[in-house]
Image 1 (cartoon, rainbow, N blue to C red):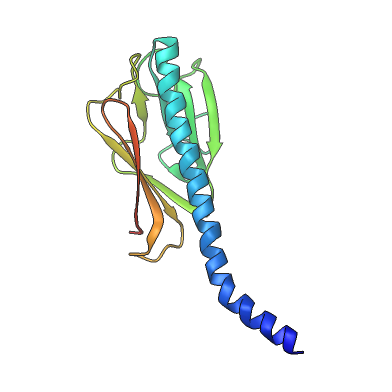
Image 2: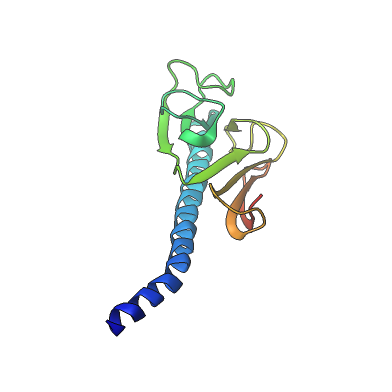
Length: 159
């Protein structure tokens, strides 16, 4: 009986900590997947010597306005910055429903044939735990894509 009581107390103490570990792991995995998607879009643009992009998508075959379903990488053969019929979808990644992904400006992250952003402005994506307490540290990642095409990830507080 004493063993059960001690086990119950230890579980009560360890469970919140374990939840945080799971959230951190999901956030890291999804961040790495998104950074890999950006790297793939950039390398596709350089490899094919034509534009490519990454956009939000819920079905893997068309771009959408919301990042909640995931994202896709495609070869933008006509260079219009939008997924058109006949253009190849290179990869689709479903989003983790336990995380919230949003873009600060623009839905499409496009790259030109030199691997630079199709737009001359920087762009950033924010990824955080869905039910994150405002101000909680370590449960948000900001992925900044510079006009040069380089990507930088920073850790921050939930907002």
